[in-house]
Image 1 (cartoon, helix red, strand yellow):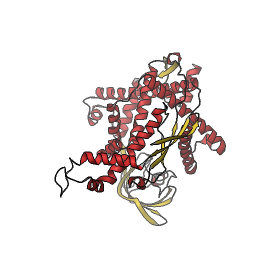
Image 2 (cartoon, rainbow, N blue to C red):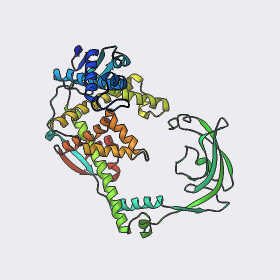
Image 3 (cartoon, rainbow, N blue to C red):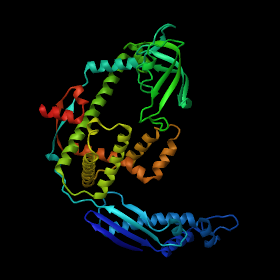
Image 4 (cartoon, helix red, strand yellow):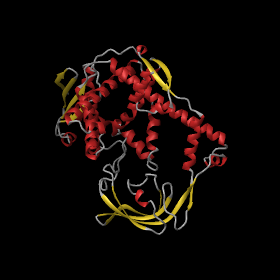
Length: 453
């Protein structure tokens, strides 16, 4: 085994690592020797299977595992021998052909690039003073919430054959969608229920059905949004042949005991309590989001140090890929549409640098204070992901179990939240009463209001 350092540039290290084919073969033979007394194969007595036969039967798959283990082992050795502190997972690139290595015809040769954790001093969290916006749930908030629940529980009844459809009315329709005169998959339905003004169909579809009556046949012309999930339809012009079968008026549900029972609660008082608790949770989450943003701003402003170039580039690339998609689909923010590409890149690179800096600061706070993500927390996160795919839960669990990168993506936000919660217990926090409207404003706008008061 040979480890050669090829790059030593401030916070970047690169290595070329060679593991001789003979060493890999020795590991393989050792494993085969260890299993020959245990394996049972047809045609051989227990413990009498020749190693040569075992190599022929299991050698390829076992050598694949040995190669993976060797990459992990010697990558870690390069780090440990030099007492390096990685800022992120190393980047591994195989130089030799993996098929040849597994066949024993080549040495295992790979390169490893690694960004190092910069040295910096953490700010004393107790020196940070933050303002937390809070809002109490009012009786009117509860009432408005109950009214929204009632609106969601409304029923519909026929308006009559000559009644024209207006906003809030429900139509029962059959439709067939066509692009260039040809029906497309998913564009046909019978007895579909559509509430005018609900915004549940393609933009422009519902508006063209206002004033229609039962028995009307109409052609509705629309253009699918550029960001439509089905790529084969995104941005396409389509005609829908629509037949209106019935027009129904909405019957609003009352905020009463019947509504409570319909929603599975014993009384209206319990429904009010449930609504108040739900609103309180929403307010608490919004308050915490503003506090977290203020904390991150304070941490960003309190730390200045060199950043690992590779981490910044990777973060910027991810951000810029999304920006390019937004440009193509016309979803770029209005304030960014007049800016040059160079100006946009400069702004988003600054965002990438902020994210990397804060990620390193939070990671260091977590390390110094022994903040850990427990297996129970990670398992709970995996199950939450799995429940989003009914009927495929076990497949999703297996994906996370067998993919460490996917598992790391779940672990990262849990770790960040735990570090933020820890720091919120260290900083000085002053609660400030704000209106419900202000609580749900953009963080920058609310910060200006808090400073002004």
